[in-house]
Amino acid sequence: MKIEMVSYQAVAHLASKASREGVSISNSKDTVWFVLRDDAGVILSVGGLIKVKSGYRIKGSWVEPSQRGKGYGGAILEHRLKWAEDKLASHIETYSYNPESYLKRGFVIFGRMSNGAVKLRKTL
Image: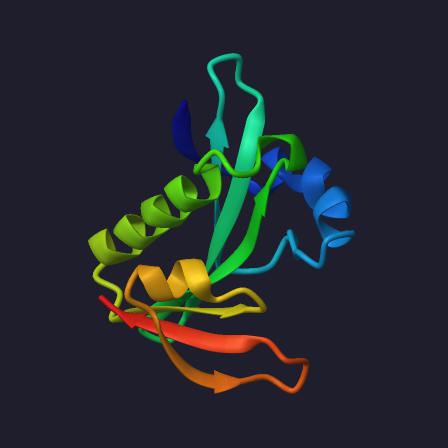
């Protein structure tokens, strides 16, 4: 398994598949994309980070349905946390309907959105 930074073009083919599950994989300014690939080069998980003020916001976290429950989502999340920390970001934030995995990694809730998503932030 290998995690690498890629261009949006490398993940664009997953956008419609992810959007059916409410995950946005879109070509937005200041977003960096990461993928976790298997040994054959197949993308198993994707995740983005978008620059916000002095930190980053997690964007587009998605795992291939047949590969869920194997830790790939957590691995790519940990990679993004380390990457943001290495970039000297002050914090990383996300909006989530399922905040448990973020809370386990030291994120704290700082609000709720009108659609029910929880706003979470971790100081780096």
